[in-house]
Image 1 (cartoon, rainbow, N blue to C red):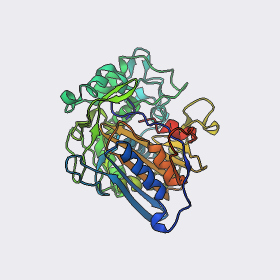
Image 2 (image 1 turned 45 degrees about the vertical axis):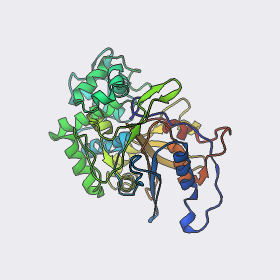
Image 3 (image 1 turned 30 degrees about the horizontal axis):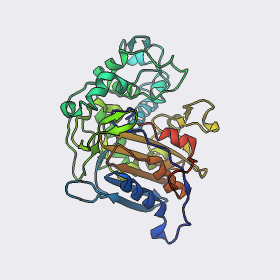
Image 4 (image 1 turned 180 degrees about the horizontal axis):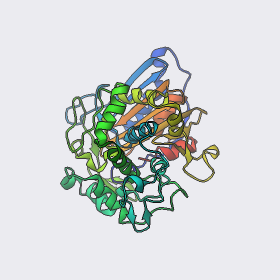
Length: 401
């Protein structure tokens, strides 16, 4: 999720070429080196998996449980945070394909009167602007009340139940970031509203729609939508956080944050999955197996997230997916997700045939971007003190949670 409350920003590191790959079993030497470095620097454990034109690679480093020392396994489930957003986007795009809504509909057409207050106006915001974060709607996870409840107040509030309408109400307390369509800013409120639209249009819950439209067609048998449940399905490791974030970074003792009520993330970030299911999902999604051609084009139409546009090195954002060009020239679609004690990234090449997924079970440091560079470019971080040379678009996108 995007906010300091659930995860630390991912730091940029330089990338240097790894040695030429050796035999097949050593082709992921760069990835293993980056995973080991994360553990050496303090992350309890790292989990990774890739599917490359039919060839599967699985890897891990560190532990799943600091108390028992159990290693992380490929079947372990974890919270994926904002990687959830692509699931929500697919639901709305499929509803558009069925003629039940149009992405150029206003929010007010489906949720009349909900987006109002302090300059917010749902009659001027489209569903497309929700999905590509050009709505200008304030991000509710930046609200001081919720931020306090989910950082320093987490032990007392970890089981709190939040309704979607309450989350939108937190956003309406604040002024919008900009007029609709005039800028770009990542806001979890956009995807809570998208989930509410799906429920209004279908008369069914967002979770039911995701299961029917995404999980079943894509064969995601290990992916779950917990709702108000704080439990993790087995098998799973533990999730760890320091919870306190200040100007100098995370502080305080490591705390076990595995059990929590994820209702505050809902359609923007509640899903639990595995590296295997995330690879299957991104292959189906980017490979065009979940949407008709028109909606697939909409999904992969990226807007610039900074001055100069994507061609100038700034990041691009589609509808629940980020576009980044790596240091070696390879372009990928990806998304990161951060929720207490769990940092996740899923990515795919343009054809959906080379996918990868990584998870860290600690959120106070880490560089998911370095893992992507290692997977697709065969690069590893240099010695400390070198000037950062990683792709500007990747650097920006992996800081979004």
